[in-house]
Image 1 (cartoon, rainbow, N blue to C red):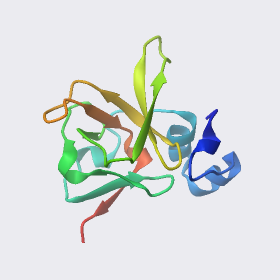
Image 2 (image 1 turned 90 degrees about the horizontal axis):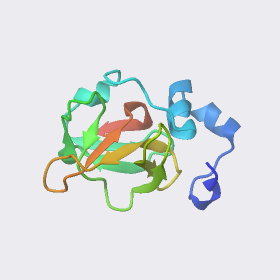
Image 3 (image 1 turned 90 degrees about the vertical axis):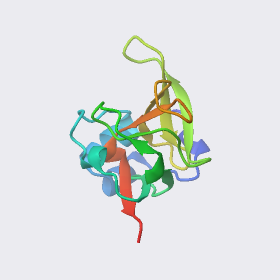
Length: 135
C-alpha cells in the first residue's frame, strides 16, 4: 500500500510473509479476493467477534452478521473506528474498499444493498478475519 506508514501496525513485506498464510498475505497485503463459498466463516453464526487476521484488531461483532447469499461473510456494520475505506477503481468499476484501520490490511468491500438498520453490506474475505467465540 502506498500510504502504509499511516497505520499503527507497520511491517515489512517479509515480516507479513512470516506471520500470514499465503492466502492471508494475498488478500490482506495484495488486495486479493478469496473464491466465494470457500470460507467456513461465511456460515458461522455463533456469538463472538471477528478480528483482523493481520493484527488482531476487533472489526465486527456476530450480532451484525447476516447471510447475504454471496458466499462471503457479510455484516451490516463494523465496530466503531475499526475500519478505514478507500476508493477501488480496479476491474473497470468504482467500489469502496474496506481496510483494517490498525494495519491497513484489505478486508473486502462495502455495498449499499444490505439490511436495516444501515442498508450496508460489508462483504469480507473470510481469510482476512479471525473469529473469537464468546467465552
